Every structure is written in C-alpha cells, then in structure tokens.
Image 1 (cartoon, helix red, strand yellow):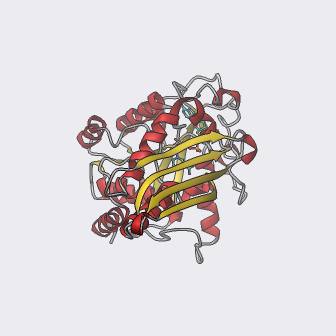
Image 2 (image 1 turned 45 degrees about the horizontal axis):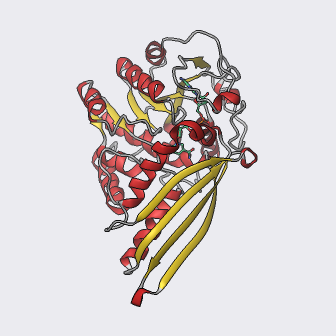
Image 3 (image 1 turned 45 degrees about the vertical axis):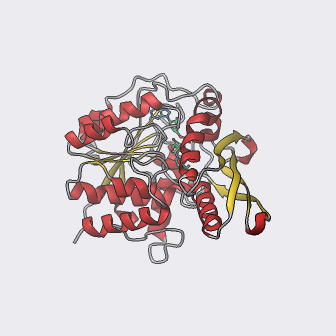
Length: 353
Ligand SMILES: NC(=O)c1ccc[n+]([C@@H]2O[C@H](COP(=O)([O-])OP(=O)(O)OC[C@H]3O[C@@H](n4cnc5c(N)ncnc54)[C@H](O)[C@@H]3O)[C@@H](O)[C@H]2O)c1
C-alpha cells in the first residue's frame, strides 16, 4: 500500500500527539490499544507519512520534526522518543497565527516565510492538515488556498469555517479535491459525552431544563481561546449539544479557561438539571479529566486515512459523512449514531481493494 503523504500546518500539541502516535503504534502494531480503527479501508496508521511541516515559532522552525514537537510551549506528554524524521519544520507566514495571550509563550521567528504551495509540491504532499491555533482564521484560509494551489486535499482541525462554508467547499469541488472539517472532535470528548448524557436522559422521558459544560486547560490552545475564540468555540459546541435534544433547553457548552499548571491536561465540568415523573427533580454534577493532545490522535488517524480513500476514488468537495463523524462543525450536522453509520458506509464504499 502506498504511503499517505501528509503535511502539517502548525507543529503544536496535536502535531506532537500525531507524530508520537505514529511511532507508538508502529511499536505496538500487534496490539493497538487506544485506537478506534486500527485498520480503516485497507490503511493502517503506519501508512501515514508526514512529509512536510510549517510553524512560526523560533524553537521549532529549522528543526527536525522529531525535535520540534518537544519544543516549548508544546506540553503534550512525551510517550516515546522519536528518531530523526528527515522533515525540517519550515517557516510560513504568521498572519493572525499568534494571538495576544499566546504571544507571551510563542517566540515568533523573524525568518522569511517559504512558498508553502511550492514546498507542498516538492514534498509530494497529498493531504494538508491544518493544526493552527483556533483563532488563526486568516492563516487557516491561507493554508486552504495553498492546498488548492498545490493540489492537496485539506483537513481543517480548527474551528475556522472552511468545510462548512459553501464557497470554500465549492472551491475544493471545482479543484477536484476532497475537503474535511471543521473543528475536530475528540476521541473521548466532552461534547460527545454531554450529547450522549442528554440523549439518554431525554429518551427516558426526562425534561432537561438547564445544562452547562465548562473546560479548564493548560495547553497553548486554551490560552489562545481566552482572547479570541471563546465565543466561536462556545457557539459551535452549544449548537452541537443542542442538536442532541428534541426540544429547546437552556444550554451553555464549551467555555474554556486557562490554568498554566494543568499543562496539557483538561478538566471538563458538566451540570445537568431536569425533571422526570410527576415533576421530580434530577441533577448531574460531573468532572471529566483528559489529556488534550492525545485526544486528537485517533480521530486524526481516521480522518487522514478516510481523506486518502476519497482522493483515491476522486471524491471532491466537503466529504459529508466524514465531516459529520469527525468534526464538531460539519457542513451537515447528524446525530452521533447516524454519523457513525454514514461514515462506516463511506469507508465501505471507498475502501481499497
Ligand atoms: N484534542 C485537541 O487537542 C483538539 C481537538 C479538536 C480540535 N483541535 C484544534 O486543533 C488545533 C491545534 O491544536 P493544538 O493544541 O495543537 O494547538 P497549539 O497551539 O499547541 O499549536 C498550534 C501551532 O501552530 C503554530 N502556528 C501559529 N501560526 C502559524 C502559522 N501562520 N503557520 C504555521 N504555524 C503556525 C504555533 O506556533 C503552534 O505551534 C486548534 O485549532 C484546536 O482547536 C484540537
């Protein structure tokens, strides 16, 4: 099976989890505990090869990826050592990549930016994965343009509207390239857990009146969220959670605060209030703790492999079942079970022989 040649925009904590995961599962290929889909449509994680990477932090630019993923301010846990990859992190244009709060922890490189599309072509990249900070709207769109120019499929892990924007989806359709996004779901995510709890309760006849879900984290992404994406993230998550209930309730989901000593850990707090038989009250008050970056790994493995299947079968534009399965803000939101079924059918239909 030919390798899936992937480029990364942003060598932050998610990129660290992805690169470490590729190494980790190459060592535990026989017993891949922690992966949702060890094989997907004929591809294993070991078929993924990172061939180019871009960043703007002085401690990452010019370094081999194996070194750059452990450079501060990254704080994803080190689960394995990585031998040199032969991929040097290239400096790209910063645009709005560094937010006000994140500027305190990112050391901006003053090297000139490379021509991203040309670098993608030289590396024979087939898929560009956008792992920029969530507030980097212009920079995310810039990478989407570069993917179009270089004829790469594009995966948007950030909340910037690209796959869910009709005009952008059309650009990829016209260029005969696949597109996936927006805002990657977590493998064990607070949004999915929240939706599942609400659905379970409402299916049992509970009338949910109010619910919230708030996060506290210590990664650069939580810091960036403070000054520029709090509202956008809150809207995306609240809409997603609201879709789990067949009626309207008071819902707030996805506000994040930054606590530096938490490092890459995230604590999610859930509160649900409702009534059931004869108006009897019920409450859920729950804390859920995860490590942030590894939460993206298994889903990224799935999205990259599914996008490659789409490339093989010349599917173009936003990949609706993949977006619904793996992203919080897909072009078409589906209930969890429906999205999973649609994704399974998509994989079956496009699987390599
Ligand atoms: N579990 C998860 O971590 C998870 C889940 C869903 C979505 N996401 C999304 O994935 C994205 C990445 O998350 P992260 O935790 O890795 O963030 P991060 O802040 O750790 O990494 C972002 C990287 O992008 C770099 N960067 C900034 N501007 C750039 C530019 N113009 N060009 C190239 N690089 C640039 C930064 O220097 C940094 O290395 C975020 O948008 C986040 O919302 C993450």
